Length: 536
Image (cartoon, rainbow, N blue to C red):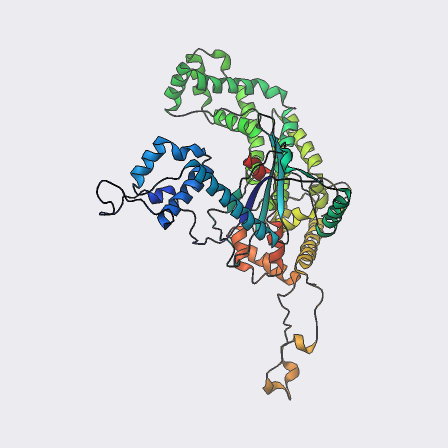
């Protein structure tokens, strides 16, 4: 076991749109000095410790050097000095070494702040990835995800909805021996024991990557459409490389109309290219190819229909990929509804498919195999057993709990479960029991313990104590104070909810105070590793 430094990025969700003052943009300082501020020909510079000078230093550091990844040498370049002289003649820019010290100090303070914030969290969700640069130096990336309480302590940093993340980029070269430290066997055993007794780990697969594998499996079975895809790619290449073809294209389809070049390593990028092609008029595109002298790129009627069918089949997969790679909204709750909706989509496609039935059949098979845990959870396998916590891929209970606790779905996703109505009721009851059990575990309460003593009941008014006290309707004080009762109330509220999931829970956390800790825990789980991959 080794101790090492790593690239750390802290992700914090915030539902309420607070009016907290954030980092000022550099445009804030593009104001002319007040008349009389400059005396004679010699400018009067701001004091190095003045608020204005410090604010400009901070803006240059955060907006330009860190935010836009500009090199430190920019602060000493003549163009930048001339620019700042125009913006504010009283400002004296820092040298490169001073800016480097500021960044180092800022990184240290933010690391400390993030460490203290994470230390207060009961659970933290992380995405991890490794990569290497062109010089084959190895790096490790980690993003941590939590949902922060709105009523944070005064010492904590406020987070706005428009800027939900604070990031620390402190990359370390993993090949640098100075950052590694070997542990003795005794220390290793002590550390392993500590992690085993205090940490509850659960590793989840990346949903977006698994979906990409499913699409890859399906595309291997569409050999008949490769000729059409090859012609579409050739048209795109000509549009970006031939002036003659571009002029003919813009003459028929309008100036500025274009087809984006795809990244061959990303299937959804190729799909966007095909979507752009089929959005054009077939006859006009054929005439354009012929007029430009590229008859070999003309798409036949059959090939055009194949491309349109391909786009129709794969478009929901691209939508699912985009939805589950978000960073500022919960994504874990999308997994079960998305898989079930894709299954329904493929069932509809296979009924009307003319050219791509092998593709659709392979997609169905791949989804079933790679997301077997979800189908096992809802009893759609041959055994017919409902098991929300099984050992198959994506069989963890967190997916069902998150789907229920997202007001955009609650229990509506049961519509896409392809079983009998009686079994759907069984699934409905079991998933409710699962949510109640998890809520009790997180909040430390027991739903099924309800006292019937006199202290738990409303006492009748004094005037009824003699003759009619037994007629008084007595209602226990524990109404809406159990996980089960709050779940019923939550499902009623979701029928009319139009707010986002985060804002919904912030608005109702006092009424649903037992479910709220569980929602805050599970909805912070990212469905894919996209956040850490964006760090690269």
